[in-house]
Image (cartoon, rainbow, N blue to C red; front, side, top):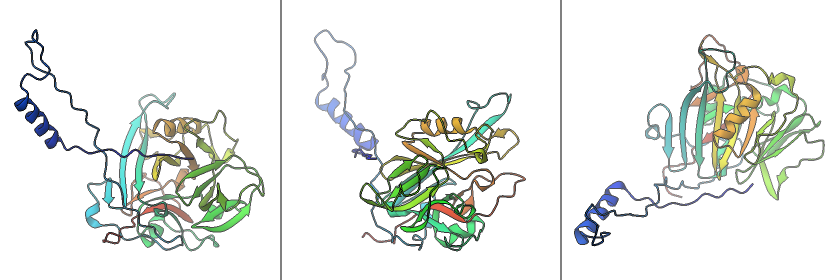
Amino acid sequence: MCVFKLKEVVYPMKSILLILLAALLLFPCWGLSEETTGEAEVTVDVTESAEAPLVSNPLPIDFSGGFPPLAEGYEGDYYYEDPTIRVQITYKETKEYIEGYRGRNMGYWVVDIQIGDASQLRTAAAESFTTETTLPAQDIASRVNAVVAINGDYFARHKEGFAIRQGTLIRDKLKGNRDVLLIDEDGDFHVYHLPEKGELTDTVDGKKVVNAFYFGPVLVENGEVPKKFPSFTFLSPNKYYARLALCQVGELHYKVILTTMEQDYTLGIRLKDFATLCQKEGAIIAYNLDGGLSTTLLFNNQRINEQKRVNFRSIPDIIYFASAWSGEEE
């Protein structure tokens, strides 16, 4: 998948006003004909403001973590920015996907993430990817200095499938029963529907696969929701359920979308509706990860999707986005 980001020019509002004032002083009758008695219209072709480009500072493709986030990078409860990463978290509620639940809402979080280098999208295990150890997600995230972290695919639950973590092949035992997500060295997503044994390798389109996940299904592909989904009974596709998806929306630009069941008046979402929600939030590719009591969103090492009266399960792995800012221009 090739996604291109347009570079835009920033014109501060103060500068625009000065340009307009100068134009009016120099050309007071600009735009007026002999018959015109009203005020002149001055049109200035201005490109909307664009955010500053992020610095590319590659992190090693191994199981080390990122640089500690800057304390001053956190602005408010749900925003972080440094020269290498930008994160904005938004909570929303809607009744659009609720049927038969009068007066109740469906709550969900959208995490918008931009990074300067693909290596900042990383994975980490509770202990290692060769054990089944589980830990609270905060314990894993704090060890690797995650800016924002989510649960992975609960790799320790399976003895089958396809798993690559930080460039290391962990498991290659495909059985054609689940969709697979590959993330290449450029940070681009590639999805495969029910691949069989021998159909996947540690490269895709000539690029090294850095991380691969085995859960699914694919929720959005090429901006479209599939017409049908694999019949995974463990997903409870027709029930209102807490769900989480990792999405790519552009070049080094991602979204995490997760639904909550955190208060009495909020509900989860059915699988097909969740796919539609991800599409509406701009996903080019969206991949479903573990949900239910595994559903985890951490920011500044605090759980954002805290659910009342619920004991979240410990998990064996996280996906996280790290800062690559060492404090100096590279």
